[in-house]
Image 1 (cartoon, rainbow, N blue to C red):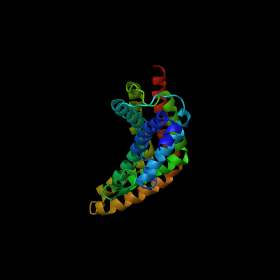
Image 2: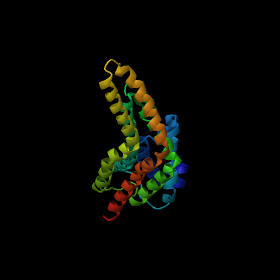
Image 3: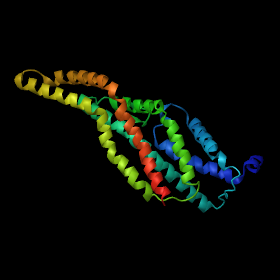
Image 4: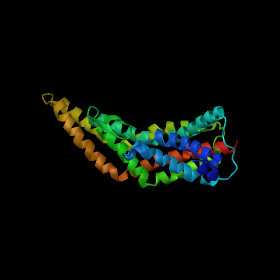
Length: 263
């Protein structure tokens, strides 16, 4: 261990540990790592590996090592806050998919049928869990993990490891993204919700003209069939609003980085 410290330098090892805190706060706050079932030691190894790779250019840079306990705790909290702020953007995008799934679940009637969701580690309605899994698959399909790593690497340049930052610069971009979350999330489910609303109107007309029919027994299977049919048809146009949800992540980060760069 002493030989490793002598070769790499105490300052670089401290930088790796602090950067690992930033990466852990980013990844553990988002469902990215939970998309694939893996043990906790494997997740820790991934975080440390990414920290070593990103911090490799800092080796031998002459960065002073943090030796004071109070300064070290403060640096850990700073790194955790930066990583958590980055993670909020990713979390908002995944929450948009969850919102779309909940809207369809309520309209179809799947709200009471819940399954275990591995992404959120909780029980969710069926379509909400499916939307969450689709969000993770779509994220990796459009190479969102590559853009995530590029944003993380740029954050190291903009916010040097262990140094302070101004949370006020991130407030406006993050709030704008969360404000657009409901519109973008509804855009994912809007055609299906509209189709189910028309089915509700049709069932209401039938119930008005044929009061002897049990609309509760007939309406539920009709809405389920109509909802799944509308969802399968809408799947061909699902990519555009989903891409806008993920584009909002990088727009939020870009706005934050731009405001921080002007300071």
